[in-house]
Amino acid sequence: MTVRILAHGRTPREFFRHGWNVFDFIVIAAVFLPGLHGDTAALRVIRIARVIRLVRFSPGLRTIVTALLRSLPGVGGFLALALVTLYVYGMAGWLIFGTTYPEEYGTLGAAVLTLFVLLSLETLPDLIGQGLDLSPWTLVYYVSYVLITVNVLVNILIAVIVNSMEEARRLEMTTHMATDEDHDGIPDEIDRIMISQRLDDLRSAITDLERDLKIDRRP
Image 1 (cartoon, one colour):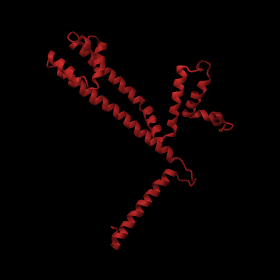
Image 2 (cartoon, one colour):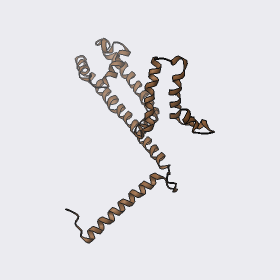
Image 3 (cartoon, one colour):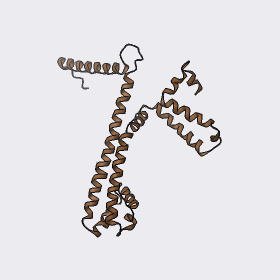
Image 4 (cartoon, helix red, strand yellow):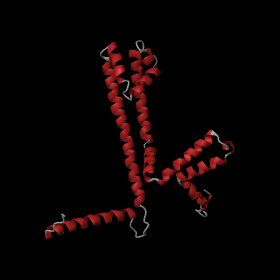
């Protein structure tokens, strides 16, 4: 870590401008704190956290982590909407089933917990059976809940994450396109794109020439 900081010469503060460098510094410096000597649980957690440093060396993992971080605002909005939905349906379930099925809907917290477990759809047949024993109209309650939460909300969450993944990929591509290792004035990524296009044009020209000359390349 000292060598990496000294590599910045007279501007060692440049080392701390990058988030991963700060993370590396904290993970390594935490070992020397007085309260973390020995084999404490906190020290073991920090040692495990050092594995996360491998993310910076893998473009694929780095893209996924970036996508997850960029999706946090959207996920926060999704969680707020999901909590409101669970509260509304939990209140309704408590009023409808509270006296008949106290284990599942006896309190508002138990009702919300039951509906949260229902997101996996594993308990849906049992709950529908219990509801039909009480009234056929309870089917509307469960069907609307499944349609709104499982189908709509979960798809919204997937859309938020997929959109963040696409943004992270575009950001990664933009970063690569900004590099110019051969110093020809053209980014390396654009060089590769231009070479690929020229190769495609050359293949098309060869195919047209072979067709004009009636050359059969089949064995």
